[in-house]
Amino acid sequence: MPYNQLTNLDYFEIKSVLRDYLRANSDFTDYDFEGSALGHIIDLLAYNTYYTAFNANMVANEMFLDSATLRDNVVSLAKQLGYVPRSTVSSSAAVSITLNVSGATIPESITFKKGLAFLTSVNDRLYQYNIIEDITAPVNSENQVVFSDVKIYEGSLITNRYTVTKDDFAIILTNPGIDVSSINVKVFESSTSSTYEKYVVTDNILNVSPDSAVFYVNEIEDENYRLVFGDGIFGKKLSVNQVVEISYLVCNGSVTNNASIFTFNGVLINSQNGSTAFSTTVNNITTVVKSFGGSDIESIDSIKVNAPAMYGTQNRAVTASDYTSIIRRIYPATADVITYGGEEADPPEYGKVKISIKPKNISSLSSYSKRIIIDELKKYSVGSITPEIVDPSIIFIELNSRVFYSPNQTTLTLDDIKTKVINNIRSYSLSSDTEKFGGKFRYSKFSSVIDNSDRSIRSNLTSIKMRKDFYPSLNNSTYYELCFSNPFEYDAEVPSIVTTGFIVQKYPSYVCYLEDRKGTIVLYRLDTQTNEKIVLNSNQGTVNYIKGEIKINDLTIIQGSFSDNKIELRVNPKYNDILAKREIFLDVDIEKSTITAIQE
Image (cartoon, rainbow, N blue to C red; front, side, top):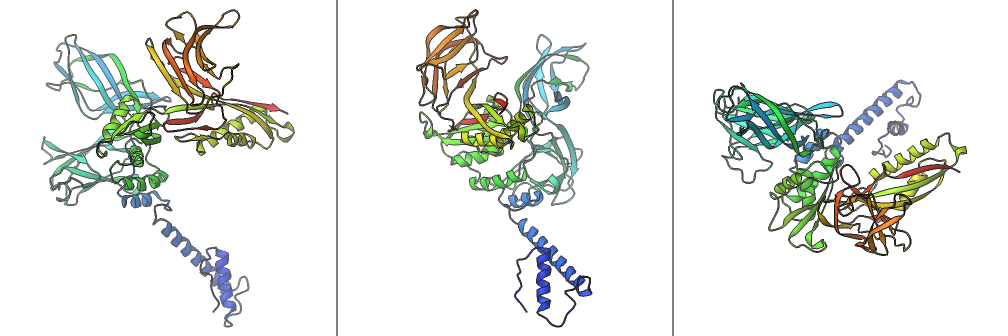
């Protein structure tokens, strides 16, 4: 019998090996004829071997986290590392609402019932926001009730009751889009009981005793969730005929992030007797914190990265990488995060760990979000290390590119060429290591991306500018420091630094600008007739061209450049390659770049 190549997985190669085997055996002679009976048997054997090898290969792949492709298998393998994949997370906001109360009898206090509370519209579609617990507030002497800093959550609030029927009682939640963090469990002794014990979720057995009222949540098949209660050793065991009430949110993930306009749609009752025999009208609704934090269910690729990383942290934050892994878990709407020791800061701050988070779709976290994250991090912190969240310092990179192409090699118009270039730049920015903490803008790479956008493009002339947006402290004399951490171009004749226009308190009738002149920041305005620059302050600040730092002294701004009072500051870099250090985040701003297609 000849040697058989057992690693063959292709059908035709397997068939060839079987024929080689028969050639070495003189008992059969018609195996080599197409259409013969023995030829059909060889085909069947080859197909059977091929299918068996394919299935064996797939089964072997699904046994390992790195190679598994089915979500159910990836989740199961992550569970072995003690990792529970993130569910869909509801977007949350904080609002304050004042209502006028009228009627024959004015209640002393009013209860805002849990459930549907507000509505918001995103892309012409209505979404519900809920409160998950009743809130009671007194009616003041002006017949007004004020509910302050009410935390609201997007989605539909679902409440179900289950009767315990056996010792190993478990509950399967099958609604799509469940926010696991919103699950609220109450256990009643019977169906007629009005008192209950509240159970809390836990993801480990540390500090769990036989009397701990806890439950565990795991993702199972088809993105469903299984709730398991204690067994009398690790957690309190349920008794038969007890009633479990479960409430949770079914939400839409990240869809409503950044929503800021809400319409009241809640239910109010008299706190004393539950009556609704009174009327209310909305006096004012203030959005304290815009909606944030919503995210979709964790993807397979994300599980493969985060499960080993979280296992490495062992549920404690000691190293900078530990904080990175934990933050991605407690704040799912993270686009990128960087952490570094306070000793690496300038100046050094020992005993601290610096954390910079770039959220998805927005530039920085609100103060409210920062407080929530810091409070969650305290559960994992070890020793006296203090976590501190710093806003990302975003450097926008603007391109000014003239693209030369040959009309003899394409039927595309000027606008078509421009669109192809823009799409190619956008795709490369997202797939490369540019738009991230520690990112690098490589000029030659982007120049090649432009050239390769279409075969008719012959060359391009591209220049770049760095831009920072800052929001001034209005009506206050303020010192501003803007750090680019990349050297500036120095030109004694032409300014390297320019800003958009703004209004200052000292010259309220003029639109003012800033530019650099030989290391000094100058405040000036433009003459309405000649457009000549008229200097208002020749020493408004200083520039360090080598370090890439701008310092603006004692400037009282009363109005910025845009409706949100933002001011844009642009700089010519010394080098075309831009590097991001520590909390600096690079962003290639396609919308404010200029791409021009030119026929050769």
